[in-house]
Image (cartoon, rainbow, N blue to C red; front, side):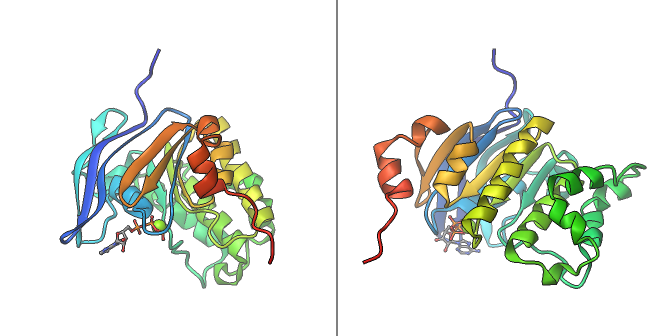
Length: 249
Ligand SMILES: Nc1ncnc2c1ncn2[C@@H]1O[C@H](COP(=O)(O)OP(=O)(O)OP(=O)(O)O)[C@@H](O)[C@H]1O
Ligand SMILES: [Mg+2]
């Protein structure tokens, strides 16, 4: 039996002026699933996420259908999508550098506070549990965190809003393999709390390892899709995205 997917995007096209950066993309994220979209630089990955969130720049124009829990949210402003439980951690993490780790996290719950939720900080302990490093550094200015810690803070801040659909734009960007492992472990642990995740990645190996389903995006087109374990064995994916470790010359 199929339940309503949390996200169902059909025929989504995005153009910036005359250039179409995304051609009729259709993707689906089931309840509690981790779904990844992999692809090279410039393929349109961020464009896809920003369009789903309603966060395209003014020059960007999207057409197609974006259904969130069965409702078409394509015309909704970003705030209403957030209020419904959609959350995007953008490529530029947009932390408040001079503020402490804890204050950045509290800001992540701002919308809930404004909406009158009395227990708007109820996720703080959970976030500190997931990211003990953030707890240790709660009084440190965000701008002085390492790249990996900053990434953790960006994800932690998103979780403070208690999203149902978390969209992450390249969480592994610029991070060392051990930190990537740690962050992906946490993303996969989030599944147990019922959060669905749409993950955009260039690190295909790490992404497919924790995903239920995957898509390959190439110059604006979804070139391949399938269950993550199958995609990871697809010869084309192996050759182009997983590859063999290059030996030094
Ligand atoms: N605001 C914009 N105006 C014009 N063109 C844009 C704009 N944003 C993105 N593009 C173009 O759209 C295409 C897709 O860009 P996008 O940022 O979605 O790629 P990406 O897959 O996220 O790449 P990366 O892995 O480098 O982040 C690129 O050719 C890019 O130059
Ligand atoms: Mg991008």
